[in-house]
Image 1 (cartoon, rainbow, N blue to C red):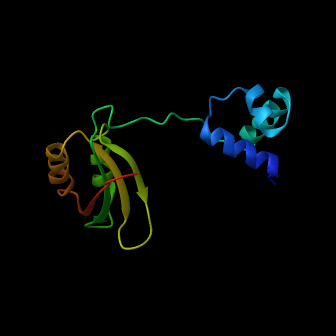
Image 2 (image 1 turned 135 degrees about the vertical axis):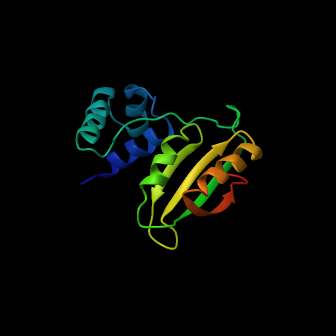
Length: 136
C-alpha cells in the first residue's frame, strides 16, 4: 500500500527522474538516504518499472504525429505485426485495444509524403482511420 510520501516521490520522479536523492529528500522532507531507500522499495516492488527520456520529435525532424485506428481484415494479426517491425523509425506505440478498432497505432513522420508511403504499405495488411495530432 502506498502512502502519501510514496505518491510524492512518484510525482517528483515523474517530473524529473534525474533528480538527486538528496534533492528528492529535501522536496519531500526526508533525508537523502531515506528517499533513496523509498525509491529502491518502489523499484523492487515493481511500482517503478524504469526510467525514460522524453525526446522532442520535431527537433529530430519528425514533424507529423499520427494516431491511427487499425481495423484488421481477418483474425490473423501476424502480418500486420510483422509489418510494424519493419517500420521501426516511424512507430512509437502499438496498443491492442477494445472497442471499434483492434489497435491504436502512434507514429511519427518527417513529412506528409513519408506518412502517405507508410499508409499505402499499411493498407496492404489492415484498414485504418487516420488522425493527425495538431497540438500536445
